[in-house]
Image (cartoon, rainbow, N blue to C red; front, side, top):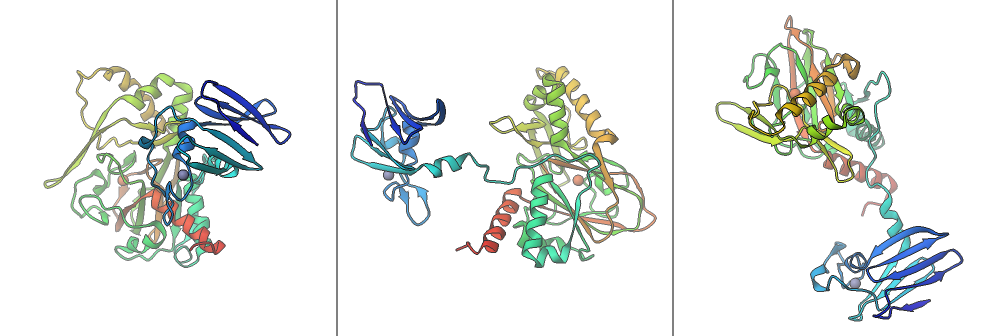
Length: 383
Ligand SMILES: [Fe+2]
Ligand SMILES: [Zn+2]
């Protein structure tokens, strides 16, 4: 069925099959079924996303057409739908064909959707050797990690820099200043409270970076100390509870710029960022929290008083024992956290024996990529 759009007419409609109706408006196409809107497709969207070989780099599927080659008020000469195929003829003679299923598929999430922690949550433990050698096992571990933001790898080698071995599963190490693999023990280069036996409140590392590492691996090589329980906190759940109960506090935590600094004699890292970040849909994507790295805020800054009330409330929630999951990280265990979501902490310890932890950082995008690779491998679809 073909419909020509008269340039003087702003709206036309025709039926496709028994239920679906196409309405052609001046700026968009609408697909309506049983009086409910299935799709609204702006003309610029339709032209921009043309999948034809002239508009794409065929080898890579990247777009080569650029929108500035048409005017903003572009509209179709004619529209045609046969079965699930939508064809549009443009005034310059260009023809665009869409498979409607491809358009509907855009609504599905491309990544695993994170889920909340149940009551009395404990992270799942996965065997280190199997994680590295068995693809299906690694898939299950990474899926669990992407869902809840934390897993523990068990029976890891108790040797220095074993975290390098995780790259085939987690992607390349994200290097930051100070060291590629960071040593956390009390007889090392001291640039952070972590290098003392003192308790560490929940935090994420390198809040002083504009984009802090999004995955952190904490590898306990030896733990013969007394105390020093490891603690994890789901900061997204806490931020969500602030949003539900104190929307004014939530707003302040999303908007107020907070300075963070980590430094030593040679290095200086400094970022001014809000504590909570949301995506464009309002979903929380990052909580930046480090009591130790947070700097003095200029008291002349507008909104300091309100921010501090919100920050006090957030601190109370983050340090509330009811919101923590605590366990002892033994020698040979690696705690893996999605660091923009899960804060880590440590109780004070008495160094009656060695306690040596190594940290390395990775990126969540690379971990998600590995999962897709593994799934494609297992389906035999990877080219
Ligand atoms: Fe840390
Ligand atoms: Zn095209």
